[in-house]
Length: 273
Image 1 (spheres, rainbow, N blue to C red):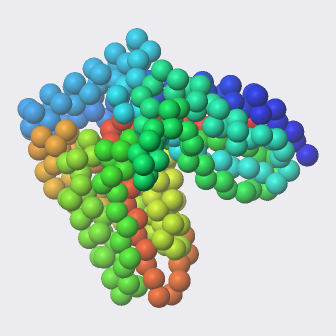
Image 2: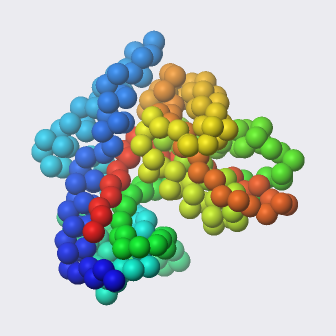
């Protein structure tokens, strides 16, 4: 049995959160540096985003004013004990967001909680002594544009493709493109939605290990980039940097498809204990 000190977890997570809020995914910055487009506006917007990211990193400033809601994915081994783990996660958020915008409020009264807690925490039980925690800062601009489609099995792959393209067509302009498009297929409603968010964590430029799913990713990405939304919604061929799909078995009478749009300020990272 492995015992982990919650105080160590809290300190490491606080550091991770701070670093992520300052430095977005480097693959995004690299893609924007190497953009190939005929649109002057799109090239200019891409250059400004790159400049913003480099200034944020060099001056240790937040790369986006919306520091998002803190989302955590916790892989916890069945041979691991960390007393006070959940409190450690919430306290790490309080510490890291001390000087950041407070963006969490009661859904009815709209009263701000004042410290960006509670965090959103998803647990995944595994075998062994693993404890890996992944952080994702999810801003409202992109999250608001996410959608759930309850398709029928008869809709098939075409229905999946059409749904994702529809989601980007409807909300892509408001989600601060270029986007990473997370797609969750299968399970029940909440399964699909969580899979779509987990899909955002896969490195930009990689594909699903299943060949048929990887082909779907490539097909959808091509169709999304034909929408001419472009960087900063100024028109162009780089509406999305990636389409990442995750799947789970589902009921024979269902085909849930969730689409989670992520802006270019993709801020995530992991730590293992």
